[in-house]
Image (cartoon, rainbow over all chains, first blue to last red; front, side, top):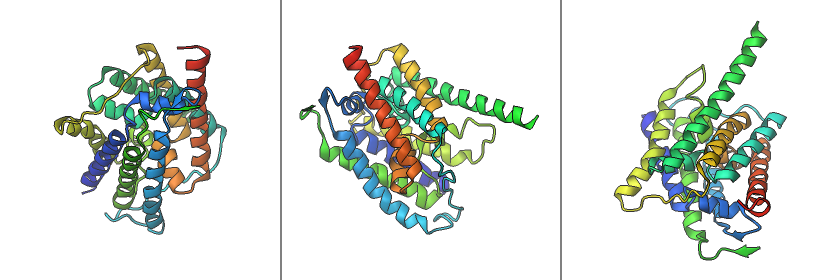
Length: 143
Length: 144
């Protein structure tokens, strides 16, 4: 059952990205280009998403278990660290270069764009490098 | 600043945003999970590969959306102006950056802000600022 609800959530998320125009990097870059001909659409996407998700999280917040009976998995880290800042800055640079963040890149991949496939493969490589660095660090720490 | 009124889609973008918020609501209420795409994807790559099922199902749903769109006669359009080298460098930076930040536009930008997380607000402001600055440098200083 959890697989079905997760699949539906992914599908609705992807349809939302498509409807909003955010699967198109040109539209994302048109938002990020304040000094050019500016398209404010991305702000309206964030507004719509936050309005609805705020309601969802308001109802979810007081629960200890989800509707399928599993424990709620809330993010436990609340600290503002250099890791957060530098990681976000690195992500933002990549976002500005190509106009893709992870969700839209996957949607464009599903639509069959070769460059989206290249972006996703490079993104997976970046994620693997993170895993390898973190594993190496924990390995050193445990010796 | 000039507004791009030819491409501005306030209603469609707000409506699409509502769908994204609905998806995040479905995932937290039914599965007890945050709809953060970099985290869902990255969780498949680590040593401790736990609860793979819902992650794969969510990503399969995300990839199904454009396929469904194609069958319905509305395939998503992606105009990718970046060249191949830029695309690959950008993908790598997005991959490693989102993992160190523990979130991207969905996990920090949508879910984190909706939860009122100060950490996610700082993360979102940081990647927004970096994105704005990068586009400014690329388009207006380097002219590429």
